[in-house]
Image (tube, rainbow, N blue to C red):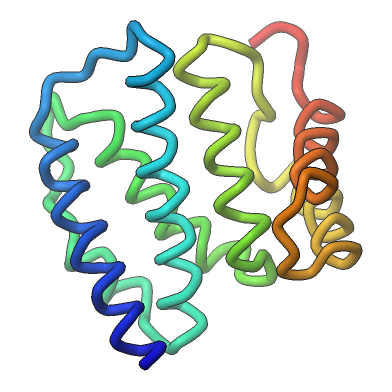
Length: 155
C-alpha cells in the first residue's frame, strides 16, 4: 500500500512539475510563491521517501528533463533536491522538505538565506533529533531558527 502511495505521489508530482517547469515564471504574488514552494516541498518529501525505499540518485535524475538554457528555476531546484537528498542522507522526510520550503520562500521573496545546506546541517539534525517525524509548529520553528542563525545579513 505504501509503495503504491509513493508511486502515485511521484506520478502526481512529476506531472505537476512538468507543467510547472514549462510554464512562464511569475512570482509576483504570495499565492504564486506559495504554490511554487509547495511543489518544491512535495518534491523534497518524495525524493527522501524514494531514497529511503532504495531508489538511486541516477534513477531519480532520469525522471527529470535535462537542464537547458532558459530552464525554469523549479527544474534547477529539482536537480538540487535530488543531489541534496543523497548528499545529506541523514535528513528525514519532515526536516528536509520544511527546509526546502523555507529556502524557496526566502529566495522568491528576495530575502537572505543560508549559503548552503552544509552550513546548517548540524542544527537541522538537532531539530530532527528533538522532533523526529513530528510535524508541528515547534519543529518548524526549530528549523526556521536554524536557518536564521546561519543566514548572512547580506548576500
